[in-house]
Amino acid sequence: MPTRRDAGERKALFANMVGTLTHRILITGASGFVGTALLQLLEREHGSCEVFAFGHGEGQQNPVDLRDQAALDTAVQKVQPTALIHLAAVAAPSDARNAPRHAWDVNVTGTMNLAESVMRHAPEARFVYVGSSEAYGASFQSATGPVTENVPLRPMNVYGATKAAADLMIGQMSYDGLRAIRFRPFNHTGPGQSDTYVVSDFARQVAEILSGKREPVIHVGNLEAERDFLDVRDVVRAYAIAAIQDTETGPDSVYNIASGQARKIRAILDALIAQSGIDIEVRADPQRLRPNEIPVACGDASKARERLNWAPLVPFEQTLADVLGYWHRNCSSR
Image 1: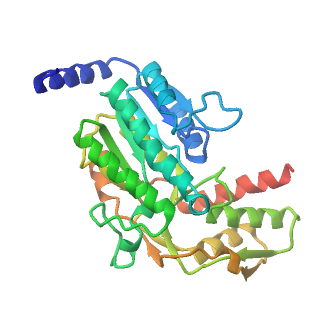
Image 2 (image 1 turned 120 degrees about the vertical axis):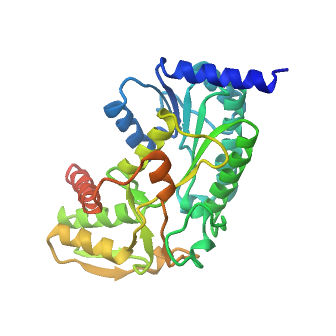
């Protein structure tokens, strides 16, 4: 059985090897919105990395089912990653609400399966877990400003509960040797995001109006909520930093990824309409209201700034223009 000294020597040897070997980064959920942005970043700025992209669904080159422990063992053993970025999840709160058992199976049990595979077959690899600010839930209601990583996880919906549970689980496993870094990103958007999310939904409707495919009326839910929004291209930079740079891992390596600024949903809609250059009527739709709506959710990312040297760079106005441009091109090509 390895001694504590043996384990320390192995880690030191691995650290020396990483300095000379190509990074081998395994990404789950690589076919999704965030995964696509991450792959583009790695190709553009970290071309020397070997990237192994695992997606899900028909047509994927490397399909992966997080519920299949044997398949995960085989994949991790074959790739021998220096880092794994875990994006795969039931990611839409509405999907989790509609199929809660499936969400728990994928988001919690699937994450455990993957972490166990890494501990067995690539124990020195960094395990970058992507959680969610939804895990804070009710803690936002008593907050007097942007929340830090130290506030309690008090999720109020199924999605937030699954992400909170997996977050705590990975934190516990880091005491057992998992080289974990946990992220709690706040709302993020960008070109290519599904219209099940609010900014993309608004942009699609505006684009359809600009393309003459619908009357100049936008249907909306609650416009008074305030959220902390980021550009997805800024968010994936944090994940790449965690996977590639020699940053600390362990129980205390948990980071909010946030702008620190709460934006009212109404202001985002107004900005998109202003960018369209036309008059558009805004009409309330009760079907678009979410249950357990939190009035304000905003994050403090000071820890990520200090330890990871990360900060958002893309102006939000540019993000909105890029999302609207994406949907306008999409509508024009139909």
